[in-house]
Image (cartoon, rainbow, N blue to C red):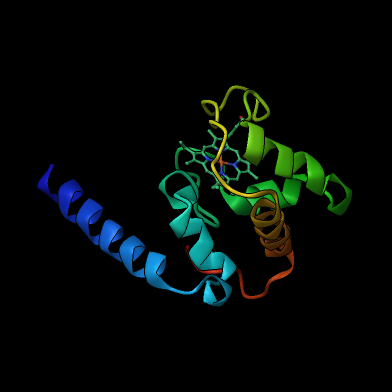
Length: 116
Ligand code: HEC
């Protein structure tokens, strides 16, 4: 239990630091932390939701807008009941597009992207 608390405190410190950064300087990777995606997602490890690498393997470039919609409006049952639902995320449309772009590029990065 206390371990969880330490982890929580550490991650909220990190988040506070990011919140002070000017927006233009925030990388997409940092954006995933700032917007809380990393509580449920990582690049190659499935957590509460599917690993972003699995998302990248499953969707094509022309399906980007579907993923943006899933992020903005939430998503249920797309992963055959393997996961719970994702609630709608409080992010802007442009931010969601930036994130989807990053996620889809994971399948082309070599060596595989490190954890978020
Ligand atoms: C509370 C946990 C949670 C959070 C926070 C969360 N997700 Fe998810 N995410 C999920 C789950 C669960 C699914 C699987 C949904 C399904 O089966 O349809 C998912 C699915 C997805 C998918 C695939 C959607 C699809 O149509 O197949 C993308 C992309 C995604 N998340 C991105 C994000 C981004 C970006 C953020 C941060 C803004 C985020 N998620 C925050 C739990 C979460």
